[in-house]
Image (cartoon, rainbow, N blue to C red):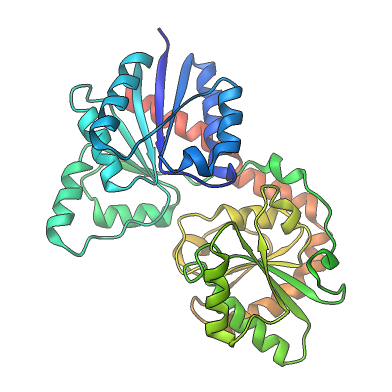
Length: 367
């Protein structure tokens, strides 16, 4: 019987995204080692991600769903471990109740659990909750998606074994995109077009971007802002109105799309004024594309390797405004050096590098 890795994830995005491309690349590498991958998604994914998960099933992937019923989920995980000869469990984005189901199901098997930390650890304020989490997670090998996240694990989980593996990006998906015109967004050709992802309005710093662009426009400069959203349109509209009193025509709330490179290559600049990140795929993707990148100097972003990135002081819309002006001056230089930019990003953030490191980690844990 073949061995298996059980990937359990609280992931229900409308699009596969770089996260699923990463797991697919890992899956392919494990197949070369005669190891299969079992995908166990959260309950919400059964509907929210139905289109691309159906494609996975059609391609022969083994896919199951949690039910949010503790006893049923414990049985399901036990059955998967036994049926597919699972040797290792790898988790992503899980809530404590979801992890408890794994903990209970794994008590007899005592399989190694790799807990992938995609965002910074947040130290529980309540000492009882802190002790519970330390007990439940005590045997987990924690993998941080960046050095910054790793530092938070050292602080909050000093006794756990841990390492960090920088996220990798599936650059191939960025080579296929639709050529869009600024007029497709209702913006004139002579305006500078900026893009920000707004699904988490304040964590992503959309409020800071709005204030900075508003000031640029008051100074007589032509800038428009695209706010890409997969959901929460009404909430985003309400938040914009709280800041400006209305949604002006220079702010475009647009629907996200799976071929995100179409956006990156249509705009002049991508903004990541985030207040918190693990290691943002989007910044790396945007730098690989034709737009310039402006980003906050939070710990997860300050050490990113970017040839043309422009950093600003976090939570400072005035400094963000100045960074936008600085990035504008670099645009032509970047466009003239796209081959070297792409080579540099592949050297530092290729998906194959990420897969190599994860497979090596699996081997060290199982040996």
